Image (cartoon, rainbow, N blue to C red; front, side, top):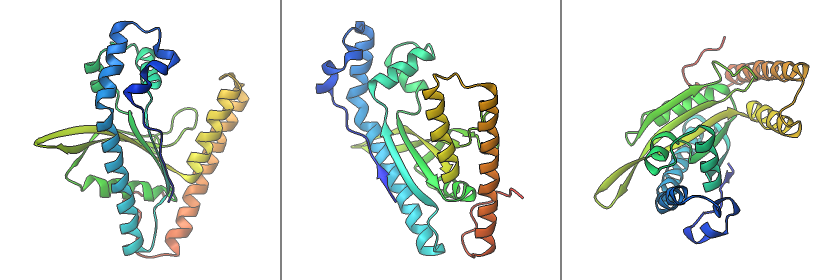
Length: 237
């Protein structure tokens, strides 16, 4: 399983970012406050990544099956955080950032089969130091574009001396097929300046539906030829 990580961002690099050079004092204060606690998000990301790797090992040991194909993790850069807050017209203060931006720490988990996704989530929900803050299932209800994924934000309990803090980590679960479609669809929209024709958009939606049916059929073959790991409690038949 491959775990891809992003570079650590530090206060010493703050003045070297072109985007931040001309910001007003309020926004600079926001970013400085964030960088002072950025390590909390990094610790939470590390903790959640370890949990996922341990669950994958557990499934391999007990069910002879690795549900996770690979993972990628990242911490949002200050530029990305500012862009999101401006796009959503949030107040540019630290309290608003803490309350409304859930995906500063993010992990993308690519699973082999659809049911693997729900099984991993079920196992995570049994852990006492995790609680669900937000859940959006775009597998059951895909976006109009055809995008499929399951987004879930867990609050991770972290222990600092005698203090317990809950830090959000967003996980995006996809199958290999869903990830392939999402990656190529994103590139196509970017290359076309988000100016795809209606026919092309409809084709992409149809390709997503086709890949979803392939996912279901591959999963059905796997279940029919294996025992043990039941892949959760979802029934797509």
